[in-house]
Image (cartoon, rainbow, N blue to C red; front, side, top):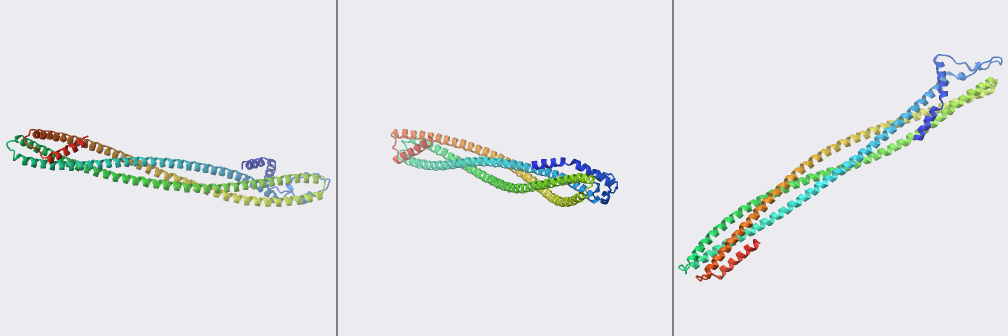
Length: 441
């Protein structure tokens, strides 16, 4: 296309002398000077005169002048078409850059959503581990409660057996009565510990309920992230559709570009033929002057016939130029319409992306705050539960030490030979002490 434009500009610079001659003739027409008739050309030899291009009728001079104006307008139209095509190419380049920028932003948003999804999955994993630990602690609590109940039953049975053993040896078992009172006190302590364990169990259930509510909140956040992911997918689909539309616009613009280049080539050919016509006219004018000076009437008639045929061909070329100009106007109008469509498409795309970016940023900020709150709450609950469980285990182990003291006192009573303890009672006490020792390890 650049070679065609250079060629057109070279041809535009070439026929300046012809345009100057035409302008002089136009000035003569403006002064209402009538050109000489053809009959005045046939004069006797003795009369000396000069012949120029003024023998052509006024209508033909006007047509030649109009042809010059049409050629100038056509040159201006070609330049304007080239400028509009370059402007359209610039708009297309900006559209490609905008699409690439939007694609990069879409990738960044997708990566951010993936990172937040990973963080949410890690938080859910931590919550699942805490729930499992809570379930284990609740199970241990239930086991401890059952063991304490068994211990209470064993102590009650031991008290009953002691009371039965005290009846036949009342006089010899004053120490046993003291030990029975001590066992009574220890039983009361164990009952109080059992009540504390019940309270701790209720607190653990409340913590479990709080974890369940946090789980529901996490599920709601997961649903929000899923919605954002679907919106992101829809945005990607819309971007692909817009890219396809831009490809169609590129194809149409390439076709328009090809048509414009063909039109420019045709215009160049028309200009070349016009310049050839003007050169022929100039040559014919020179030949007419020569033939008149040589008094060759026959040559003059032949030249007039050549001028007439050349003028007809020039009229046909002018008709083709007007047709090409109308087609060029149609192509320019199509280019303007495509430019308007591309601009509207880019504006709508930018507005949609701004709205989606604002929505994603707001949702991401809210989710980040909620996740931080949930993590802090879960950490606090876990620390409290861990501290309470540790204190309870220490308390149970202390109670185990007290039971060990009771066992030693029972052994002392038995070794005092004042009475013989039942084997079942001794075996039950040994089981309780063994279980407590295993738990406190």
